[in-house]
Amino acid sequence: MMLFSGGTVVTMDPAIGDLARGDVLVREDRIVAVGPDLRSHPEAAGATVIDTAGRIVSPGFVDTHRHAWQAQLRRSIPDVTDLGEYVRSTLAGIAPAYTPHDMYVGTRLAALTALDAGITTMLDFSHNSRTAAHSDAAIQALVDTGIRGVHASMGPHFGDWDRQWPADLARLRGAYHRANGGLVTLRLAALATDEIAGPALAYGRNLAAVARDLGIGVSVDAVFGASSSTAILRWAADGLLGPDLTLIHATGLTQQAWQAMGDAGVTVSLAPTSEPQIGLETAVPAIDEALAAGIRPGLSIDVEVALVSDMFTQMRTLHAIQRMRAANADYGTDITSYRITTRDVLDFATLQGARTNGLGDVTGSLTPGKQADLLVVDAEDINTMPLNDAIGTLVLGADPRNIETVVVGGQVRKRDGRLVGVEIDTLRREVTSSRDAIRKATTHHHR
Image (cartoon, rainbow, N blue to C red; front, top):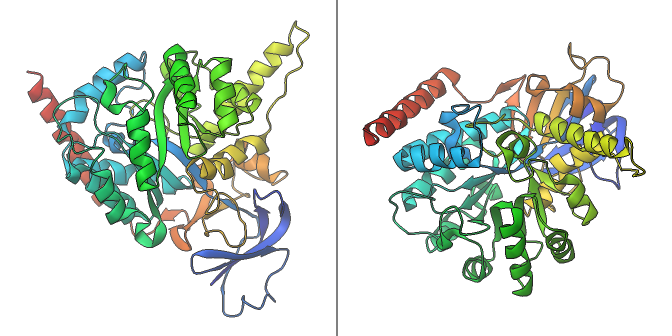
């Protein structure tokens, strides 16, 4: 039992609202109660009291799409010119050199970094599943870090592999779905079209049937432009659109495609730094298009080889870009545009992200009965003091150094500003060794 007491509580549950001073009571892996003062609550007897005065207690962030295996090669192509260069350098260049051990090291590093930055749930779009052992290693990394991990499995784009996917998903589901006390879940991952890697990885009737038979959701990457718009309308005609389908990026889609997506209740994952920085189709995150279609999106990190690793940056980037577009539309036109708020982007980064990952009833808000996935953020640090607006502070003021405590499923994963049970020096040696081995294998291969 833990009682987080005396802090500002941001629940992201519209029915509960926020508390300028409040308590959150946790028993085992669940939130029992949220209220102004729970010390006399019948279930609070014997609870460990964590003083959160001067702190903000909020839900953990939810990352809806990250290629976690690539983490050893972070910022190796920081000025990548376009999607083509990323595909050539990373998916065609380094991905074939990965061993199962490298998959484990990269995925573990990404998950630990996520936890350190307050991301309690991460969807790992694991598209380097060259063998069954590669998949097992990636999932084991999620298990070992204690993150709420969604393993979205896809075969690799290029190079030799066992062609065990998607058939191996049945084994993975049996072995790992709801593993680690329910923290790990499984999804099928696919691409929108056959343009990058051929028809085997493209979503359609075959892959939809695999997911349906296994009772798992689907996350589709590289959704942008005219070809994806055409594919979406085809999926709509085939009855393949629905709430268990997540479409990632969704830049440059036609109004008809958005209409079909909105009508079917699909979820959307935006990557606010990826779309502008790599230049995906229009290069503008499709936030206005999503909202116009009645879709509140989740947010994601995407590729650490070229991008930032944390959710604070995603929220700020989306907030700034959308408001820039809205103000620009007002300027010299008769259009009155709606500007999103800091609460909107925090909603996208928490509750909507959980819904996008198929976990809306599990996490994403501080709601009694949900899993205890929460953060304690110092609101009296040099960059956060004084606390005037909790949502504004979380979205525009705080960063990972201000996160004192991270709890996932009732387990403390970060305490006093440090990850629990992680030997950073050992981790650094493992990560560096893996990176060097990949680079050596890649260099040798290209000679």
